[in-house]
Image (cartoon, rainbow, N blue to C red; front, side):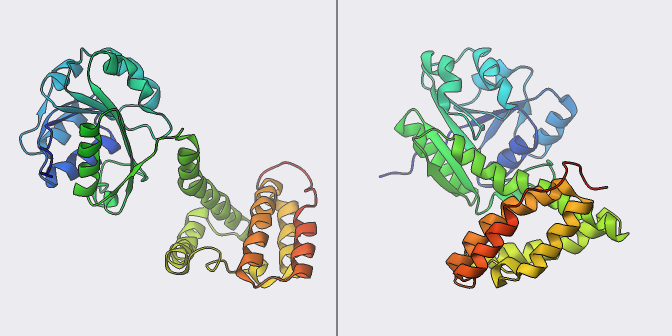
Amino acid sequence: MDEPTRPTLGFIGTGPVATALAQSLAVAGYRIAALHGRDAQRAAALAQSLPQAAVAASRQAVADGADLVILAVPDDAIASVADSIAWRPGQAVVHCNGAATRALLAGAEAAGADVGVFHPLQSLPHPNRTRERLKGCMFRVEASSARLSRWLEDMAHAVGGRPLALDVDPTLYHASAVLASNCLVALLDLASELWAELGVPREEGLRALLPLVRGTIANVEEVGIPAALTGPIARGDVGTVAHHLAALNELAPSVASVYKQLGLRAVELAVAKGTLGPDGARRLRELLAQRERGTGGVR
């Protein structure tokens, strides 16, 4: 089968996701015809970084000049932005909301456009230095037509990613991403905050922890879960865990609660790893299931 013709692309939205996608796709040889965003200065800067791309005066102008429009706008604005555009039969539009289906684009589909989802499973907090993060990234793709499905799969491969077609409700997929990324940031915030109790600024604590985090992620990549689990729970060091909890309950009760919840999961992983026997697992479960004192935060 011949390779499908690459569509001309248009972007509505010029934030970090749009920047990463537009620049990566342009490098891969896709033509970005036009883009439009609320921030005129940012839109101009993005257009200047792309060959032949122009800043459009309106959303409609982007749609009029593109075969495939990528809506990289805030999640709550997707439906209203899409409904503000007059779509033509035969063109396509996708959004980048990982938690929603193509149903957000029902109005465009009713007008004859192919609709879908193109969601990069990656954290893109800032427009700069985001392009390289798409390499190896999973893209959730959803499409109302075989043609659009091929376009989206080709785009994922072109930027070094992997397409993932999901025909089910994507809520758990997105919740998993939140746990792995957003909650990791929150966990590191808690961990670095404890360093203040040691008389060390939290920024220095975070710098000290980051090599450990990188090493842990490398271990997960190399040996998987549960083999990557280390530490006192993996070793069955009940006394060490008890000392942790005593200090946390005294100085940071809200952190103690998180420690206990994650610790109970770690017990199951240690059992699966084979480093924690039945007696040690029982003692740790009992210790970690005890109610913590207070509900305050780090002092």
